[in-house]
Image (cartoon, rainbow, N blue to C red; front, side, top):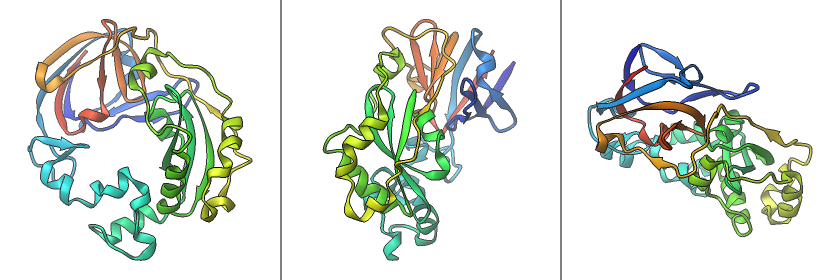
Length: 263
């Protein structure tokens, strides 16, 4: 079987074990069905996820001009505390920013390599946790806009990390944590404007990933540099494909690449 298309973040479904799907344009692959099979990946070219032009990808699936011009790549996306749509202030496109920012957001605690704090739209729970490879997560607050979520995350970063150690996550070098206890311990850090949105009733969620073999020393595949790769797929966690020889491929960080896949 051979497929070709533009890489985009895998869609997921949180069942007994997470189901992963890759949209290749003309084809829609259930990646779980590729487990324990030999898969070949080849770099074909680029296609910007914003303008659709065959321009070299700069960051986040965008060419350089779109990264600095598109409303979908504004600084407030990576730094929610910079959101200003609630004030009616435009960054790049106020209509888009209102749509994206003025909706319920969750500040959460997740455990992937360590306990970390993060922000996501309510509609992206539990997708965001799956994408980060978190085996457990819990909601901390549910606020009506992205700005409130952002300032809450900044406040909590005084005592808890906001990054995932991807190598530790992929090695499954993790420990279970009592996230309900963590949430209570961090409650006092929530800014006054967000205190009323505290989610005391929220329960801890557990997530199982389809991994048959974890790598001891994961090595990241640079498909553009290597041109092609062939290996036996033994697991999927977060947005990573895990191969038997300990090579790992981050689908999300390679968005915008046109690739050929054969099984």
